[in-house]
Length: 112
Length: 89
Image (cartoon, rainbow over all chains, first blue to last red; front, side):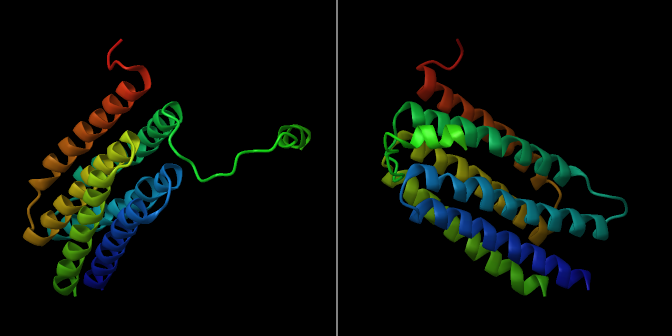
């Protein structure tokens, strides 16, 4: 039972890590590419770390807490680095596929 | 079951490495390359955790923790350099 649970967690983690990098390689502009690694890869590594924590907690006596540290650190730092990367890209005026807003658009968003 | 899944997971994470590396080489802008480096270090953590499960050794977590911290500092430093032209003002 725990073996199956561990296998499912490891496979889910690996698949999400792969999907994150696939998004990084295949999406078409920087702002969409930012989604893959910062969300999918973080979730994938989170799943792998949960699997690892379960594995070592079941194998040895006592709860294994090393993984929680790594998970906490990754989950805190991923949004911060994504925010800084987006700011850097905006500063350098990276090419974006989003359409340029028309002249009247700002007023309708102000009212709504 | 875990023994059959771990090689598949190795293959998937290695493919993820290859895709991130491709983006690192291809570019086209500096933020893309920094993002690729960021993804590479997160993939490294995934690979180290997998190795830890496979070999049953808890030593790899210290390495993973170090890579997580150093990778974050590196990403922040590179972004700061792009934003301000300087790292420590």
